[in-house]
Image (cartoon, rainbow, N blue to C red; front, side):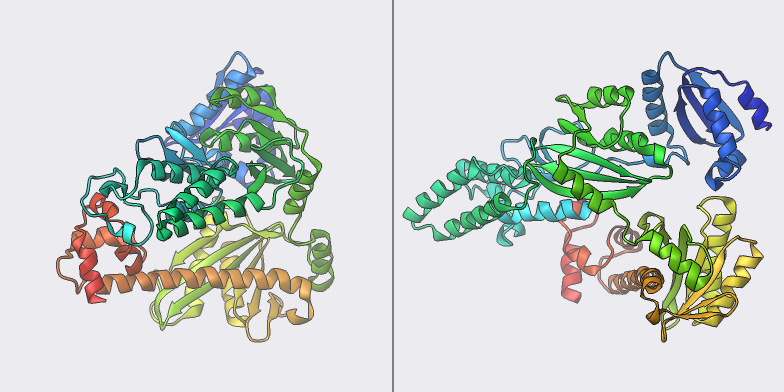
Length: 561
């Protein structure tokens, strides 16, 4: 297609444009002036590999004119969420970050949920899913909210009662009053607002002590300790608000800081592909996540975006650029580069004779006595590890112990992806090993004609070797060692963890093959849903039933072990 001619026919009006090929949409964007924005894309394709790949893959270009920028924004978001275009990365937040929900039921419980539209009290979001589940477990341990969902009527409580995770409301082992107090305590723990519930807990412990119910006293004492720790926890002093989200941008980095109960409870840093994508990031974030009453930013937000967020909010939202000084300092400290890039630039030029790479990819291979051979690719990007772009490889063409050929397969598979434009082109490859691994990497680099420098890092003496055979002893160069050692160690860790996972899976297969009542169909279900034996035998009965697995099989595996 003659892209220049096609774009010349585009309207100079507000609207949405859509790149597509025969199979799917590739990219959807909005613009005040569609033609002008498309010309910017075309010019960028001369230097940007991602833009070049977009024009190479697209077979058609469409546009939809709108009456104003707000309509363009809403249409863009709806189309992106409907079609999930390949190159609209920042909008793909799935179902949003997990939150904890205290349900609105006669006997409430706590759940991990995503998205919106849930009935009950929501707390979060949690920027790491693992933390959400840990806090949920803590709520069960401290306040013993029911674990069964839905709650059955039982004469005897389930195992969770005996493990101290549930108070047994299904069997009538706790009064409505005490359970309601536990729910209030759980909400106080999650919100940080403990002032109202603490006096009630102290009153209840006095009543129970008079009745000589010391076991229940000890249980409420633990609740009081947890809530008092929350009350004494470090807060950001002098904040004029209790609940807010702060989005702080520094160059191509953006940080999300969550303030709940007047305290900074979570933070996460993300890398933007371009500096002008902060608003796009906010759209992606709030498409599926809780919207607080106050959103703070250190950058301008368009009126169209503010209107869109307000219309999605259940209780109204205010935007402000007036970030309190202490919170501003915390945000700046968190977004500063882990490595001083100016100092690193100097080290690369003086010690290695090359400019500072923007992207370094590190590779390693691992096996267990020649079995379960795997490879890893980790990515260092502008001063920090970019875990979203890590990749694992299960070796398909090599049998037995042959590290060189295993490395060749990993690098070849990566090279093909780079050549296709599916991943940003790195400036440098770092392979774990000596001259042998270096030569393999050079052969692959040259075969695919990639514009990449190649280095290897030998473990024994921590020697960095470049493609000309020059050696740098990194123990004598701590600044360079901090970068190359980190990449090598991370590649090794990521690779080894995958190898262990495969071996653990194989152990699961071996045990299941010897347990009576586990046929091939059930084996496949268990393999797909559980990482190891311990995860399987500790699984909730309800989860097993949903998967169609009889709960007695869990006991059979326990007996075998």
